[in-house]
Each structure stands twice: as C-alpha cells, then as structure tokens.
Amino acid sequence: MLVRDAMSTVILTLGPAHTLRQAAALMSARRVGAAVVLDPDAGGIGILTERDILNSVGLGQNPDTERTHAHTTTDVVFAAPTWTLQDAARAMTHGGFRHLVVLDRGEVAGIVSVRDIIRCWLPAREPTPAL
Image 1: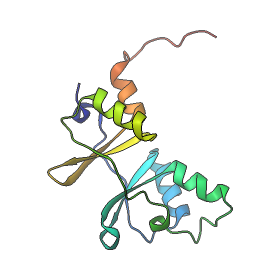
Image 2 (image 1 turned 90 degrees about the vertical axis):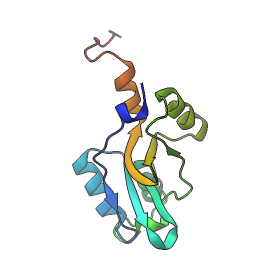
Image 3 (image 1 turned 120 degrees about the horizontal axis):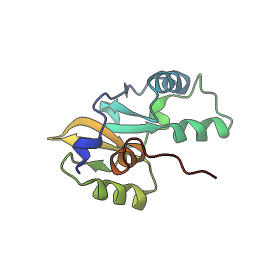
C-alpha cells in the first residue's frame, strides 16, 4: 500500500502570523494533529504539530501572543505519494515524529500520520482486546 492510499488530502494550512491559540482552535475543530504552515519569508513549507503547541504552553509562553512562525518545524521531511507505508513509517520512526507532509511535483498533496498508516494496516472492525 502507498502513502497516497493513506494520506489525508484535506489539509489545514496556516500562515506564519497565526497565534498558537488560533492554530490550536483550528486544529481542534478539524480534529487534526498537524497543520502545514506556508511562510514564503522563511523558505516555504513548514509543519506545526500539537506537540509544538504543547511545548510552548509547557514553557509558560502565551498562546495568544506566540506566533506559528516561531514554533514551526521548517526542516521538514517530506514524503512522496508513491512511497510505501513502510517507507513512511520508517521515516517517522527514524525522525521521531508522527506526521509527514506529502509533496507531489513540489506541491503539498496531503499529510500522512501514524494513525493513517495504522488504519490501513489493521482490519476496519477488528475487536478491541480485553484487558
């Protein structure tokens, strides 16, 4: 199975001037753990994750004044839609992150998460094991 089969093509896109509170509200409303940040001044495509917001709040920073550009990962590992899910899982494990921005011909095509990969690997209605 390929990344294109698992990725979400509905992408939350933010700008560098969004506050972390705005980002968190949008991410929560869309039920996503990551957003693509487009910042032409900082080199283009970055990613902001729930972990980035959590780290900022944990440091006592104000989510109403902190801007996404200060917390965006710009050293992004991109996936191609033709990668296998094993390739994506390997990149995530090696890099210690849970989301990959998917680029197709230099354009953002989607985001794939660990959860997306697990959904593809497990049967749809497998019963939950008893504890």
